[in-house]
Length: 138
Image (tube, rainbow, N blue to C red; front, top):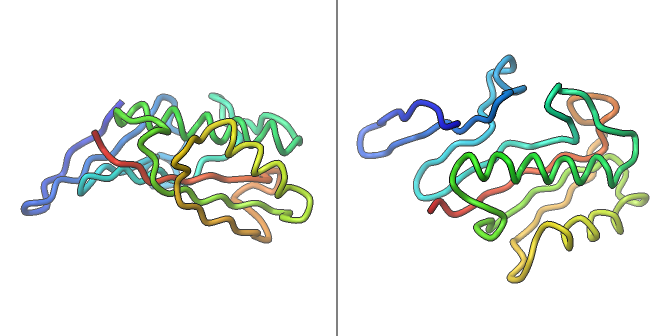
């Protein structure tokens, strides 16, 4: 589902959302389409009910990437359109190899630019990974 298009002079900004939209109560857009780009907010390993899918890093990561994919689809794009990803993890030493696995499962050449960061925590204490993306709008 796409949200309201706001015209700011010559610039149109479109809010992108899926149903359910677990970001709405926090005043966050799942994605914004503007200036020929789609900016997807960080997606975690949560299911359609807003529950963390597992304690397992790869399971959470696969769900986080699937959530990014779902938001991209709502904006009319796919992972083939992604030019930049940001991946946030809570334990780089333990999970770097898993991140590389996830990138291979969801992304393809030419691989997008990437920022990989270890953070002390994410929005929920049981989250181990969060993924954001920037894609070209079609």
